[in-house]
Image (cartoon, rainbow, N blue to C red):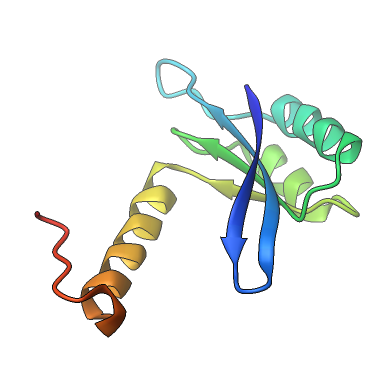
Amino acid sequence: MLGKRLAEGEQGHVSVLIQYKHFGQGRKVDVTTVRELIGAATLQPVERTMLVGRFGFTSSARELAGRVEPTFIELLDLADIEAWIKRILDFMVNSPSFGNFSPHG
């Protein structure tokens, strides 16, 4: 499923197209899925395009995602999402603007 989200940034709203693929049995996202997302991204104006695959990506999918113009597709697997969440939590814990924030409640 494709979804377009507006994320609040320093310069206002940023449109982000995100697709998540969860294939069974550890199957990686392949180049066909990247091609489909490229097509969707060219049909609507977005600033960022992201493809999330739980079990990672084939080498051909990574190659195509990194070289397509004018759309660059960010590929994220489960480890990338976990690292992203950790960076956000670390920032919140160490930021005075969040007061006594604790990720553990």
